[in-house]
Image (cartoon, rainbow, N blue to C red; front, side, top):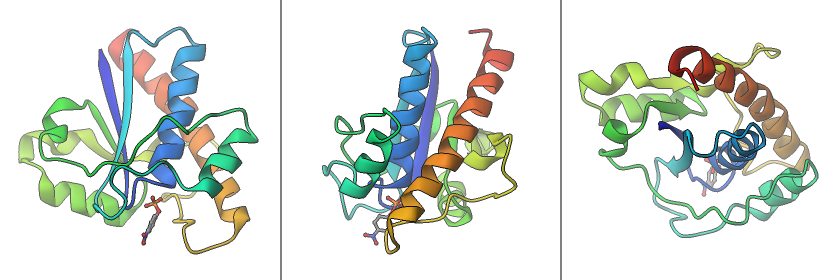
Length: 158
Ligand code: 4NP
């Protein structure tokens, strides 16, 4: 089983969007038994909450359900458990590096390292902005999810 963890700040906008989009892709490709997907936030503010309504609506417009996801905070043991630990922005990345042992650091990456069609390196935080920001998140996430699956296929023979 290849285990993928998406991480943002609150785990109610960006990382649950990536979680839902990648889950749907994995299922569509018949890989549900081979790839496990989860998400978490570096902060604990929204623990237990469903994704932000604006994220849910933007995802729904693209046929992706996020309603089953509940926010949780990233734990040190996640850094042992997961094979891919993917940060939405540089601040999330730095926080994960600080939390990690040196043996796990190579698993922590900026998610957009897997983007194939965008030059952005970070998924911008949409929380305090308008609806357009949530669509931008989806554009970036969908593209990087395709690249991520390619990487998993190449490196894990799934
Ligand atoms: P996320 O967005 O990190 O993409 O889930 C945010 C959600 C909540 C807050 C900030 C960012 N907040 O300040 O509560």
